[in-house]
Image 1: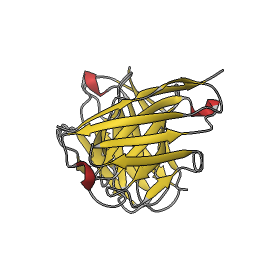
Image 2 (image 1 turned 90 degrees about the vertical axis):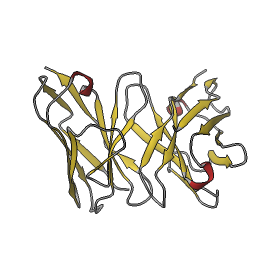
Image 3 (image 1 turned 120 degrees about the horizontal axis):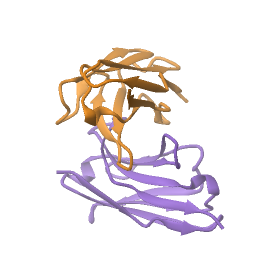
Image 4 (image 1 turned 60 degrees about the vertical axis):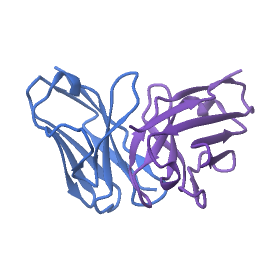
Amino acid sequence: EIILTQSPVTLSLSLGERATLSCRASQSISRYLAWHQQKPGQAPRLLIYDASNRAAGIPARFSGSGSGPDFTLTISSLEPEDFAIYYCQQYTNWPITFGQGTRLELK
Amino acid sequence: EVQLVESGGGLVQPGGSLRLSCAASGFSFSNYAMSWVRQAPGKGLDWVSTISGRAVNTYYADSVKGRFTISRDNSTNTLYLQMNSLRAEDTAVYYCAKDDHGYLRPIDSWGQGTVVTVSS
């Protein structure tokens, strides 16, 4: 099973700041990584797939990068609606796995 | 617009059974693999199972293998999860999810979830 480790566990930032979230896989997963955002009481939402492709309707301030074991989700300038939990998901092989999440909170 | 609406959750005793359903609309259902993902209270996302578009292939997490069965009815655009021998650790919100087109692709749409509570 591929383990995804996200860091930091919690990230405290202010509006307008840049957020950098990391996801490290226990083995190479090429670029088969997605990022999902989940707000309290809501279902998750796909943000990024194949490491760097934005899903439909996702604002350009969200970007993804990386390959192999190390990936990054960047939010260029934080908006109020961006404070949420972010999960990475690998789909290289079964079982599909998720990281434990990074909580992005307002400082 | 993709819509996924789960139903069938509830309170069940340990050892009991429950069947979840997910009504799908807004896309060509039989062309896409579908998954179930769960989230225990205060915890992260946990993949449960995936079924291919034509229901030829099914995949399960080790934690539910032999107890849960995923199935689909492409004539009614409905996804199912039959859960038997339920345990307290199966308590979670269960999300129905649509996978992107192709084999081993990311989840691209999520339902709102249905709550399953296993308790005596």
